[in-house]
Image (tube, rainbow, N blue to C red; front, side):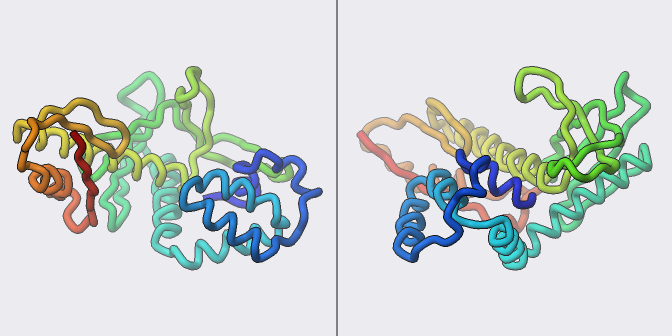
Length: 238
């Protein structure tokens, strides 16, 4: 979720975008498109410099029109956070994801917003409050919902918006799916060597016939994620 500035942010030359050519030849577009299959970030950076702000806005709107359910989740999560911030202690449920949002200004030194995932695990947004804010374009002011974040090694205020909340929820649910898969693999006797993001590496004796079992355990859908499409690819080497 974001506007033209979010699009430009990925381009190393976004500060000089006003000097970039306004059109892109079909051959260059095809080259960039092919590159996207192997290095999408590089292709995105290359393409972004060729479009005017108006063209980027059109691309953004076309993407949103093609993905209405994703956009709806952004807005539902954003509304739930704002409603929670104005109604402490009241539970807000975001359908159909069944994500629960509640603002707690009583039980801790600082007010917090809790987001309970379908798995039951909770994410916390500390020191949450509504305050005056300046928007990214530097031309608008308004009220914004903020929390303190320390992902960069220091506490800093971060503005809450639907796209950010959705990103947090999606990544957290992906983690919960992997964590449950790890437990299943361990229970089945697989020797887990390492795991990273959405990948698991196990060691098996030579001649092992448990390749399909490995995939089956990785693809099993937890009760709390019923209906969620899950699939996994696997490979083996000696």
